[in-house]
Length: 100
Ligand code: HEC
Image 1 (cartoon, rainbow, N blue to C red):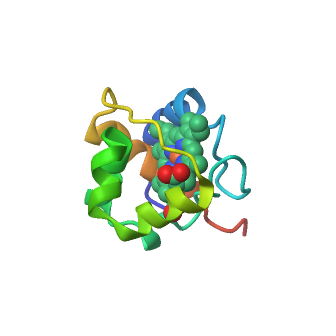
Image 2 (image 1 turned 60 degrees about the horizontal axis):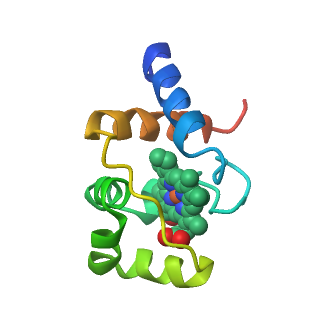
Image 3 (image 1 turned 135 degrees about the horizontal axis):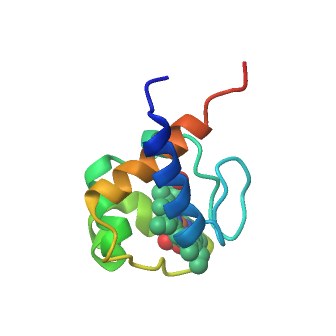
């Protein structure tokens, strides 16, 4: 627990506006299911990937491999701040918790 409702709403709103056309937390759509993404991607790489995906491909073998696999160059969202991305992280983490 520990994610406040307001953060959860902000994160959910950002995802709906920017990411949900290609991502779900639990299902693979155009992009991978995002549940557990923090185990695959360190947070500094996540910020870079969301804000400037081209730079992130050069820094992360994992992301370069994913790009090859999906054959899609990820959008960059330079207008999303680290704080916005933190809200998105919190949302995904909370939404990934198993239903009790
Ligand atoms: C047009 C479709 C599309 C949109 C919109 C999109 N993504 Fe992606 N995403 C992808 C694809 C395809 C990949 C696979 C890697 C690649 O192609 O670079 C990916 C990969 C990722 C990954 C790494 C995968 C993992 O879980 O290990 C993360 C994290 C991610 N996206 C987050 C986001 C976030 C956050 C947003 C919104 C701000 C977003 N994406 C918007 C298509 C999209």
